[in-house]
Amino acid sequence: MQLQQGESAIKNAPIVALPNGHTCIPQHYLLFKHSRESVEKIVLDINFYKDYPIFVGLTGEGIYIQVGVIGFDNYNRKQGNRDKSIVYGRKWRVEENLSTSEIIQTIFLAIKIAREHEIRELFTLTHHKKVSTVFNTHQDLPVLSKLQHLFEKTQTHATVEQLQLALESIEYDKAHFSVVAFEQRGNGSWLLDIEMITSEHTSLPELNLAKDTRLTLVIKSPSINSFFHGLFDALLALSNDYVTNNFSYQGFTLFDKKNSVVMIADILITQRKRTALHLQEEFSNNFKHTNHEIDKTRVPKLYQGKLADKIK
Image (tube, rainbow, N blue to C red):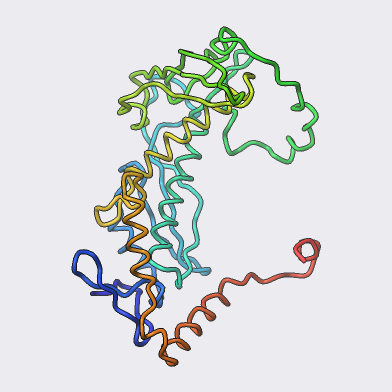
């Protein structure tokens, strides 16, 4: 088996036979020293929606990955202005000794978070004839924390009519919603079926390509506040599922829920089987030393001050 750029094996590392007849050295027996070039090579093997390009950069602090988002201006609501532009998500640090798998998972998570940032801005609430992106990530949290007494209102039971009226104030990526069914379950929770009505200006693929245009919400309290949160959570789950089902590495959708959990467990058990090599003192010492050295690089530095006192 050929190792990838940035990978090397611990001396005398075990070689494991795979179900397809090939062999591998399990990643927990590998050493990693990644560079910008090796991370770029990983990115080249990753495929996702074209509007989310993945960048690899280098600063004095090391390697980072950054996800771009190509789309329409979420805050320019004029229907005639449909020119796309690119914005950039936060930078994610990639330590050089991260495993290749951890780097792939970091990129996967970076895409999910960048996408969540966008969809939070696509969920709007019209209040007093003004539009607010009420779940966006740019809220002034220090100010809100000083006004928390304003949010401690009693949650009242809403009727179907009140929920429908509340829904009319909600827009999500130029789509609207309608209550189809509303009932209480035996455990006290409430079940709502919501019809999603897209428009020609709806751009999210998981909405445009949806075979089922209904969302089912389960909320503990039949209040309008719980309803809004339940609806947004369902839309966020749609976004996360879209990433999960379409993110692939070397053509394989790693996190797709259709992948057999039992087969994954079988392969992991095979890779973790202890062999005669584990009984060899030289290999065992090398393995323990390597893990110890890697763990040392993860220990954060603690500076004197109130934060250090709180952690202690």
